[in-house]
Image (cartoon, rainbow, N blue to C red):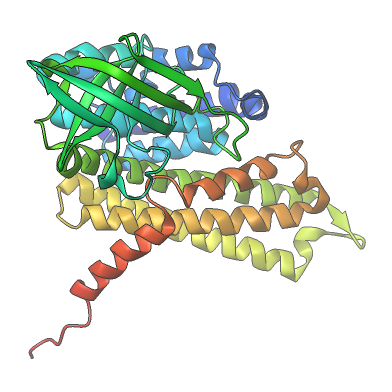
Length: 382
């Protein structure tokens, strides 16, 4: 079997799994604010948790483009379920794969793949969000160990993760540490009542004199921001770019289905021109967004130096169109769209979060604008 055909089969398996296992329960996950262990276990059986990582480490070996299509299929059914894959594969998994020692990779990646333990990436703090370089969680050296103190907030799957990659500072030096949940001084508090991502087990993590051996340093001391955080955010943004397509496509499907069935003034509402305009815009921008993401994925496969900024462009665009399309989908549903009996209500809430996580839209605008000022408008010599 050709490798391309094999990867297509994995994406198709994800589509079926999402349709049969995830989508029928997605509303319950949202209301109950829990991603059940049985669902996580089923994903682990299929090696979905590390889908984008190499086979020897328990992954499925999907290349960036097929990993994106895989992410879309899961994300259409449930944003929190997709979020689990984003954290395990794109953020924690890729960070350990790129910067972890061989011992760290073998200790953590296969158990994640089997669903025996989950990881979380602990960067954000109560007073630190977009300013990722300003972390206040700090550490000091104690012989061959490090002692960590501080608090992290908004950590996806922090409530149930068995270990965290914690970003901490010592003066101007920023370092990444693997911190096991069961270490003395580690405590977590679940965060409830969220607008969206309710089943993503967000938590606040408190570290009080947590002693960490030097073997738990990821990369080198002082490399935490330039290398570890940069790697995690880049892979995270790529996954979130596809998450935007997932939400937009699901909202478009819901909008088109409802417009075919619902009647007003003696006609199906899909026959009204203003409804058709909304559907036209949704189709066009969704197709454009998917093309952007595929281009970014192809550039990542080739190791193109501009792949990072192309990923940023894709993440910015898909998060914006997801918000637009879910808003229109809710409008098409009218009063029904305001009820959690219909998925567009949840999709609308989930879309808003994409404009905030993995770099706010405002931060993305600055990055893209700086790139544009350098790359475009230069006078060419004939």
